[in-house]
Image 1 (cartoon, helix red, strand yellow):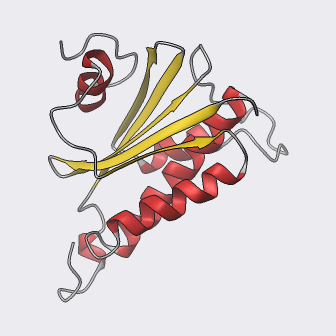
Image 2 (image 1 turned 180 degrees about the horizontal axis):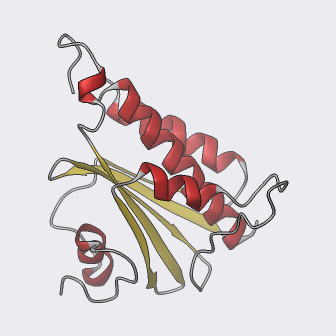
Image 3 (image 1 turned 135 degrees about the vertical axis):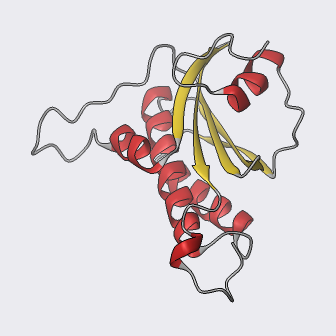
Length: 162
């Protein structure tokens, strides 16, 4: 059922994946990593490489930043004894990013302390995505974001594929 289980936004692409256990669209990439700080950097590299040559540099930069923030949050929420899983694919003109962690509860936006060095990840995700949200899954939660695959095409030359 589309819409069931989604806790923010429309989230239809993610809800389909989460509530049925599999998507009707094949992910372009999917990976599981130990919940260690290096996982965010590895995820950024893998996702950026996955879309290289298919999306504008600006969109790839946004995709890289969003997956970095989502994986970093998942690592923090899961703790160092677990793992995080992430996937990225194109669907109806959007890059879909999904990160599954092993922690219950809603992701928290927390930039209350202006001098804090952490706590701004979900605020960045909110600014860079067309939509984002989360849904509970067995053993944790899935957090997802949608980025328009063509959002930066007007900034690129006509020779650059978007």
